Length: 96
Image 1 (tube, rainbow, N blue to C red):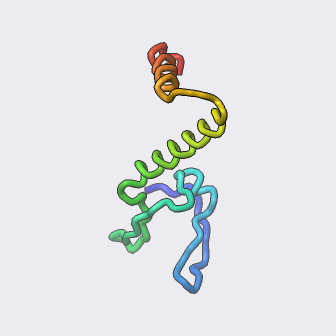
Image 2: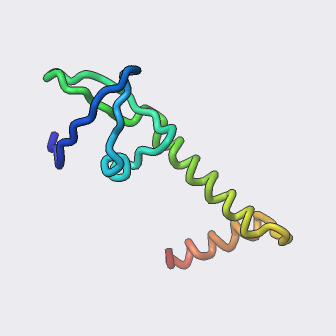
């Protein structure tokens, strides 16, 4: 395992530690991200995304996209099937 930087953080009264923002951004760790905590053979503390985290993250992104679409199309009579066909057309053309 290669470390790119070392940052010292204190543990608070409840046993919590703040993961530096640079690390969270690099690893895509956001509010509510679930991490599995374990101890390595060498005594190191290992944090890994908990199972399902990637799917949950994708679901949050999809939720945000759907909400943005709803806000953008507010007041317009749009059939989701038409939107799906338009997206499929772009994908078929390979322009994405």
